Length: 292
Ligand SMILES: C[S@@+](CC[C@H](N)C(=O)[O-])C[C@H]1O[C@@H](n2cnc3c(N)ncnc32)[C@H](O)[C@@H]1O
Image (cartoon, rainbow, N blue to C red; front, side):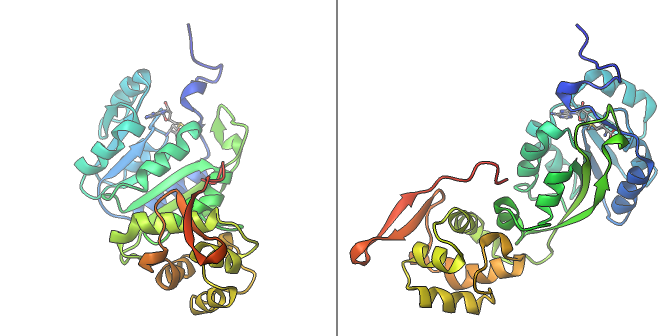
């Protein structure tokens, strides 16, 4: 049974090959401004692999489709092509290459698992990724931050580099693409030792009850509204703001003035609420679906 569409791409592997020359050039230019070995995720027919080898740096490409791997080894002998699953092998690959730069026109169905995996890896410095437009836009915080972006901005800078029309891929997918770069911050905005607690704090505020941050913080901490307001003033957060409105520096400041209070930090998946009589109890909260 053939898995190929009439355009030659295997739908179940997210094979939408990049044919948009301006985007290929833009990706190569972005990568050229970085240094070190390059790891490409999902190399396909080598639309990016070949120009990346032109930068004169080591290029390792991972591709799951054996047929493409054989072809790529013949066509781009200067690249090291590994046959395997990028989701399960990403950790080993980023560790085996010294501080790699990660590049990929990602298979759309694997964007979220690959991003999640990347954002917990410590070894890489820069990533240049082509994803669905909506994902790139959300990650870059355009139109408001999401929970995952707020949880990771103390360590990474996300930048949107433009929209890629659907007709720039073969076969043509149903949505446009977006070019996103992620750079690890030289100086994190939050102490990396607090990462898990900070993530739980962001989750608690994103999923907390209340109309604005003032009431969410008051509910979560058990503080009065005026105490919560003073804490938000110290973090330079305007009245009426929602979690999605905060920039990375405001999140870091809010963590300093509210989140780092040991008596107020909830376990991941729980948040604290105050009940009658002033007793603070913990309650499990559910994450909003789709808030990735
Ligand atoms: C959107 S295409 C990009 C191909 C090529 N880089 C380009 O830009 O034309 C995604 C590629 O990822 C590969 N792929 C899909 N799932 C994968 C996985 N789990 N691990 C590694 N590669 C995968 C597909 O076979 C496909 O070649």
